[in-house]
Image 1: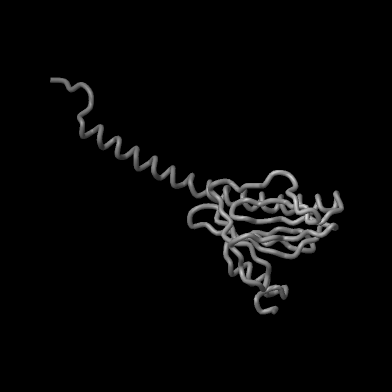
Image 2: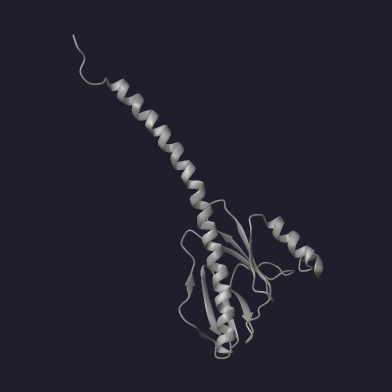
Length: 169
């Protein structure tokens, strides 16, 4: 007698093997996706800082960059009015804190002042671009350069080496 088709056990084993393979592929894709999301959040913050500097120089006005929860708003300092719409980070990214070197971190409303020449103090932003991910972004006051760090110790070592760390008080 000739068998036609597959038994339920053969089908179950095949489905189980395919599930294990699909799970492995999903895990391999997930890590690069998280890394890309983290880089995107850092790039958005760096672009916002650079654009605010250019805007202050071009319009010859003092501008405040106000960090408030996950909303960032540019404000005209002289009339205390918003400049354009607020900027929101993607839902998967949160601002944990904003800090000026050698000062305690602030998790509430933080104002970063930009001069008419586009200069701002050095500040750091602690981003949470995903579950169990941390990124520290250093926005350098004089140069406007933005650097990203995966570890807080890396950021602290740089701040200490430049005299901006907690030991520089």
